[in-house]
Amino acid sequence: MTDIEIKRGYEVLPNNNIRFGIRITNISELAIFDVEIILDFPESLFKLEGERLQKIGVIPSASARTAEFILKPLGCVHKINIEALITYRDAKSKKYRIDMHPKEVHCVCPFLKGKKMSRSEFLELSVSGHSAEMGLNFKGVTVERLASFLVQTCKSRHYKVDDFSIDSGKMLYLGQCPI
Image (cartoon, rainbow, N blue to C red; front, side):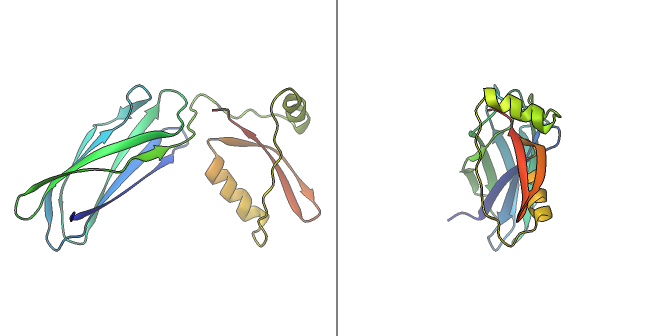
């Protein structure tokens, strides 16, 4: 049985860098010591700002600490696994090494930027390329809340081309960065 719980996640920053966090929670009844996290990522795809090894130190019982790493994509990345090795000592000085379950990083294209264009320009371009019109039903969700959600979720992968009102709501036209 392990004395720790590992959670990991990431967010794409406005400059398209990735903030990758690893949270270690001590679930044992005693403190753990010499906690270290060594990030493992494809160096051909990312440049790390800072050190690969982060020394967390002591984590008291029922407490957590988070290590944050900033990764700069060197190109478009999609479905890339980020891993880590966590080492620590228990209260009896026994050393443990645990491989973090990989976290898949999706759809980061640092060289693709949204381009301002009119609806007619977009429609003209879409005729010569691949176009897909798909719909989802968000009954009971306000347009403002849905638009805010889409902007936050898709900000690095989509850009708003246009919107217009329809009988029962609003239609958004989004352009997608190719992967």
